[in-house]
Amino acid sequence: MTPAESAAHSLARLFTQFVTPAHIRRFEVLIIRMAVLFFLSHLALIFLFNNVPALYRGHSFNYLKAIYTPFSFILVYEVFLLVIILPESMTEFIAKQFEIVTLITLRSFFHDIASVPMHAPIHASDPAVLSLGYDLVASLIMFTLTVLFHRLHSRHREGDSQADLRRFIDFKKAVSAILVVVLVVTSAYSVMAWASHAWLALVNRTEFPDPDTFFYLDFFNVMIYADVLLLIISFLYDSSFFTVVRNASFIISTVLLRISLSMERPANHVVALCAFTFSVTVMVILHLRQKRWGTTPKT
Image (tube, rainbow, N blue to C red):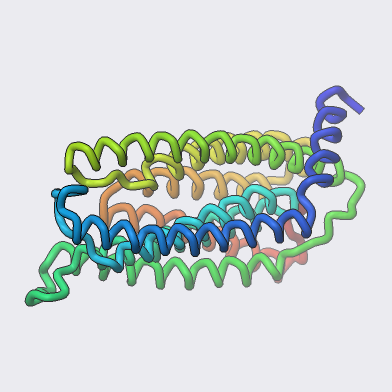
């Protein structure tokens, strides 16, 4: 066993020790409790800002904006699942990314609907209404493509008991362990950065910052490099052309998803859907190949 494989094996054992169903369940319960607490707190803050002008004279807030908060906690949990699901399958890893981007798009609906004037005439050409339409249509298409991707993956699923894959699984667990640390660090930094900007917005009576710009961009950057690293390592265990193309398509999708997060509507939805469609198309082609020749990528 090489030094790299020995280090990966040690990290894999550490990952297996701490990432257990019991620990995952405890974290899930914690996230649910925090989502409820911060949802109620957000509603209370909106009430105070709307009724105590001395606190914030920027503009009044719609109570629907509070729905954005529990969705944010759900997304944190989904990102955690994304990290720990990596050792199971690269395909599952990409599928979870699709789920996260779909949830981000759905959450944008609740963010945007708070900007719609509920007590005034609403016009279809209103930018806020158009944003809602973009979010709904894009999230529906994303959900459909995600379901299709899961369906295609289930037809390609293979067991990981092959001897030549065990060391690769150790490498994936090691990468997951590192990503857990990165997730904790970036989360803490993002919360402090957002709180600092939010405090300045409160003091200066300006618009509150978008949390997405403080977390998801940085974390998707890290995931791109993690994907590339695993693609390189996978050459040691399966260097077939079709596996390389599949894994490369996953990296391309991750890059496109990262780009979409920093774009404005509707261009962001178009780029994200291109990422979804690209990976789904590759999976369809691989499914047709498997159906005809009975072969499928291993990892």
